Amino acid sequence: MELTGEKANEKDRYQKIKCNGEEIDELLVDVFLDSFKRVPRRIILDVDATDDLIHGNQEGRFFHGYYKNYCYLPLYIFCEDHLLCARLRPSNIDASEGTVEELERIVFRILERWPEVEIVVRGDSGFCRERIMAWCEERGVEYIFGLAKNARLQKILHEDLVDAEIMYATRGKASRIYRDFVYQTRKSWSKSRRVIAKAEYLSKGANPRFVVTSLSDDEMDAKKLYEEMYCARGAMENRIKEQQLYMFADRTSTSKMRSNQIRLYFSSLAYVLMNALRRFGLKNTRLAKAQCHTIRLKLFKIGAQVRVTVRKIWVSFAEGYPYKYVFLRAYANVTKT
Image (tube, one colour):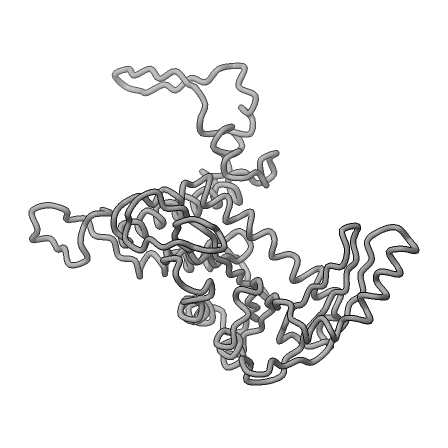
């Protein structure tokens, strides 16, 4: 499938199985929508990019200065533990490249099914771009993005950093002061926006942080917005780790970008299946929140004796298998679902 051309059809003698990327993209969103029994009031779409190392002379091969290696730069969009987008890209682009186009199709499909749901887009400072924020504002989508430090922002936060340092010296432990203000860049932003600043002082020194958001202060104050909403995006990095390492999304070693994207689809669908097993099959078991590799090691990669008779196939597990009851519960949950 990964080597079949886009124009292949049933008349071709070989390579007749063709991959339709657009339908796979829609499937990822539809599986997410179908997993809810009731429409949620609010959902948060996490966007992020990561490196996918290249070890050959593949199409789209470029050196990335931040990762200090030749790599791809795939774009991921998650909603909690649901994978909505895995788009393979070359690394000679900005991390946010293509985000608007992916959000456009995902948000449209979500609102088509759930017209009243509130959508929030969340990402680090690599996605704090005028085009993305303006698109969110035009579509009525909320956002919260990290904001890179600069001299003007640090000057605004200077007095709070001094106070945080005094608090640290007095109490001997990490101190934080939050500040809420309106800010606009000199050139890149088209309008003023709400910025949350964290003046933090640690044992290693000052650690100022900034985020920009469309959420109003009436809905969420600065501290709650930063600590409970923005910092929660760190969970997405674990989801990327699961999908990329434990579902083998990094095996993009073919010579063509298109065939490597198909391999990324394979691992993405494997993650979707594993996540469904975790949510439905492993519900109320000790592995209900286990990561994908833990599930593989403890439920899938186990030894068994297979005996084939005329009428039946017998699969016998060892009596000492420690997760027997988890396996039986998972089987019962899946068949019931």
